[in-house]
Image 1 (tube, rainbow, N blue to C red):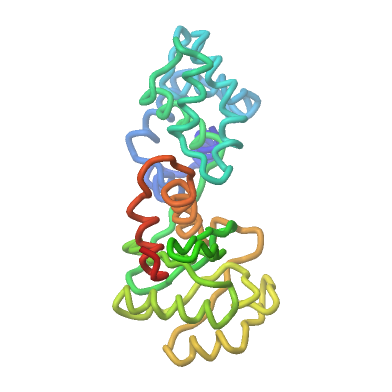
Image 2 (cartoon, rainbow, N blue to C red; image 1 turned 30 degrees about the vertical axis):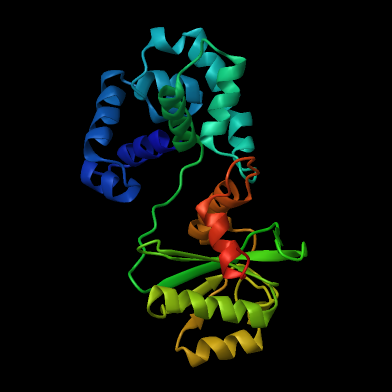
Length: 286
């Protein structure tokens, strides 16, 4: 709904449809549809600003009054704020949320409609800017927050390992490796392994504010770990840490970490997944 208000604000400021499309990133047909309904209803921008998101959805979002009054849809919409919070939990997926919803509301929406309405809710309440990634520009790296346990089947020895992930911004080619610790030496080793896997070195490395990579985080002049800086200098690349408390600066690697949690960390009583077997083999455990 923020998007609709932004389009109408630009319209009242005298911007053309083409300018609105370029400024907002919304398709031209959608902009034309919103402006047509705005003009046909003889609304003012002040009146639109005073409307609730639900009223805007009825007027501009394509939903008619009959569907908006549907008790099933209203019930689902009332759950979305809590569901969006749950989705941020480690290992949580939209599929699991739907299963919980369907268990509580057996007569509710099926999975496809549930996901459709949820994505509409997210787009209306949490708009984001689309980022274009250039090929060979950045490698995003991070560690998963929780450790994995690897057990030697021959000795029974259990070892705690960190899980490292690296992803290229443009192609989203991904590298994942288990490592003993998050110390600088181990970080350098797995980052070098990632470059070898990618077949080259990007212009910049974007780490989270790891102590092994960033000695002191700062919005303007972060201090890079000296050893890690020498590693970057050796490979002719730069270290550009993500801003503190700005997860969208490294949203790609955050997404990969979430996949790691659902594909590798998630407990299972069945045969170990191929990803888990790969981690075991890397450590010499078969």
